[in-house]
Amino acid sequence: MLEGHPIANDVTLEPLDDYIVVEPLDESELPSGLIVPSNEALHVRTGIVAAVGPDVAAIEPGDKVLFPRDAGYEVRLARSSHRVRVLRREDLIARIHD
Image (cartoon, rainbow, N blue to C red; front, side):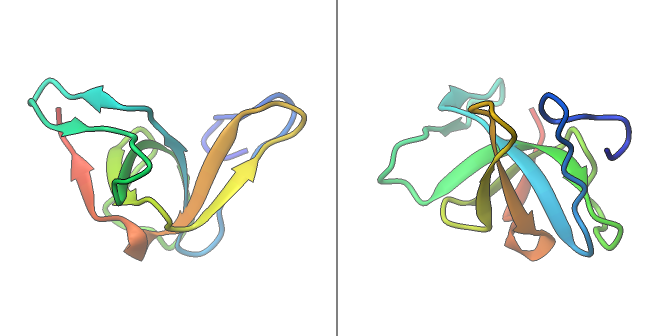
């Protein structure tokens, strides 16, 4: 468990090195007016950072980020249908401020 944030039932995911755990978001319009749909044809996704590895700089849990749709690895935790993406810091495109 990292920073006291369990991700799903009795399973926690603590990223190592420069990896980041992101909880992908569905289509949304941000208060800033930026629309980032979760359409399969698009090349990017948004998500909330759930945990960061010890070598990650400038990104913290709770940050909203933009990343390539195919970046990293999709992981399903425990017996739930809860899915997260584990990707490297260098895969992030931007932090979203809304």
